[in-house]
Length: 468
Image (cartoon, rainbow, N blue to C red):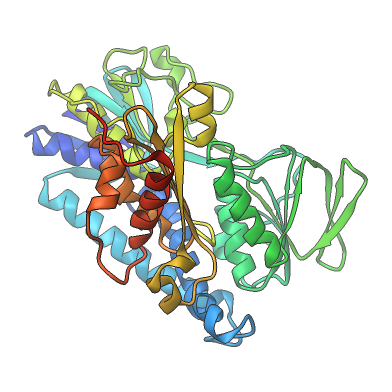
């Protein structure tokens, strides 16, 4: 029987970062991955594929140049599913090669197969060829990720009614699409296909979307979606979804409205991929969505030597936070000191346009009773924005009136997920409005929007420096 200091189940962001961290500490580490190649959901069906699809769609459609050349501008007149898939395969192969090299360089062993618990220290692994082996570990890190939620009432067929994993294998681009679910995944794919000139309708039972984002940012985002004729049917539920003989799909909403479309994407949630782990053998229980409860500081489960990290533990379910969770969990699991991460981390929503945010929203400032002031900059106010042909894009900074510290940065528009890191650094280093007013930013850049927004807030707050 093979013995290890740490066995990691899953090779997504949390699994690979945790495995490499433990290996760097001189521990014997094994990664078990049930997929055909390492990388997990993030590399093969989630983060990397969706972002690659987005970039390909924007490039081939000429989306970024339409501010200059008009909405009819195209780089490639006829864009096919094969065009999208070609770049996707190149990117995925590169990601896998990099990860395999990282494992080899750090002496991390990995095998393919399905893992399940025999007891808290022993796992059984069934390989693709049916061979069974057992491994023992001082500690186990569960980083199994999630899979799409597939309710029984949805007539999934992989062609006209799909989940978000199946969407990557479509043979033809639909002329029309209905997306059920206005969460991050649903909105990302809805806006990507809209950029490809697919007529997109989004349905969600909730009357609002992306509630963890600052409302002013969502209002601007919503305006941009409706301006390009996307339909947002919020506060409505699809009671019935039926495939028609002509290949189309008919949806009946609880409002009585009927929709006919070429394709339905069901993106209303994901489930923790824990059902095959035999958790009952170790006295561990997942919730109704297959997620595991952990100590938020150590990522230890109720079983002392079992840890869990990444999407399987729930919110925020970001690749970036999953990596850090996996690293912390691995350090604790092998007895190393793990420092608490900075309080604020960025969210990135790779929609078209991008949204990124870090820190407190204006709504949270009001709830906490913190006196505040906001500064706003629009990308069209920057010279770089003019050069790029941008007529949309917004950066919002929120400052405490008492301490003048930056407490929130919120961006919608081109490059938002890159730009947010300037605000993140200032926020975590407890910088004030004076940082933006007194510092020089490269010209012309979109980052100059920080200075514009800082001056906007400073003008409202007055020239009185904080004592802190």
